[in-house]
Image 1: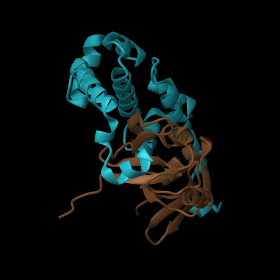
Image 2 (image 1 turned 180 degrees about the horizontal axis):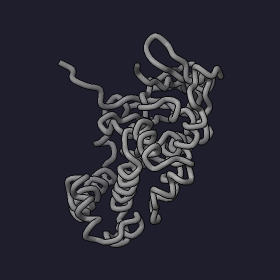
Image 3 (image 1 turned 30 degrees about the vertical axis):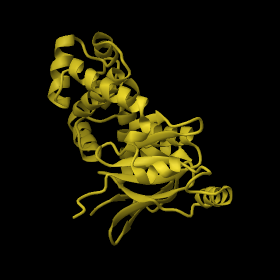
Image 4 (image 1 turned 60 degrees about the vertical axis):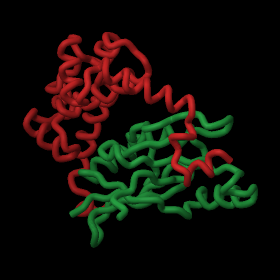
Amino acid sequence: MEQDSYPKIYLYKRIVQAKLFIDNNFCAVINLDDVAGEASFSRFHFLRLFKNAYGKTPHQYLTYKRIEHARQLLKNGSSISDVCYHCGFESLGSFSALFKKVVGLTPTAYQFQQQQASAAMHSSPIHFVPGCFARAILG
Amino acid sequence: MITRLSHTCVYVLNQDSAYDFYVNKLGFKVHTDVPMGPDARWLTVTPPEQPELEMTLMPIMEGNMFSKETAEQMRNLVKAGSFGPGVFECKDIYATFEELKSKGVVFVKEPKQEFYGIEALFKDDSGNWFSLGQKG
């Protein structure tokens, strides 16, 4: 690859490694300063490059990953307290408040809504499939 | 007046493998995953920042739409890379390229400046070609 067509490949590799570290460890307690250090960046430089690449600061991205995982666990029927601690949150209060702020529903209300929708879909899935696709999938 | 596209269809050779590719490699979200008979699922995924567009990962099955022969032809065409179902956008194509490559995604073109922006090309696990683009 030509140098001018692919700028600063080493920076991208390090930013990607930091992002993948968050992807693989977001359930644990993560010190984002450590992540910046591992990637060999100053904190400020790391924040700027990460946000340029992903549109979110590392902290915003970490929160996003945790909330998305929480949504999935709630859909699957995990208890609120299990979800809270499995997603790296330190207290039920802070988890519930953040979840409501991001999703617009409390974890309990979200779980109820998702389970109702899932039950309806599993009892009669064809009603949820647009007609142009139903022809293919029903065989 | 048509206002927007809500669903699109990508024919895949194997839904389990497609799930792994689109969810675990590309980072898409599962919108719906429900069994539909013994051989298929209604499986739709959405790009991470476009939850309103469901991509149906559709198995190629003999039935109403395909005869045995046309299903086989369709599978061969998908495998051969005859279809280019769409263009994905990202904020930073170099970072996205590095990440997807590290996850085993096969690129057939590395990021390159074109008239319409910077573009790379990759194949999904079935053989479908997608453009990956960054505007500007």
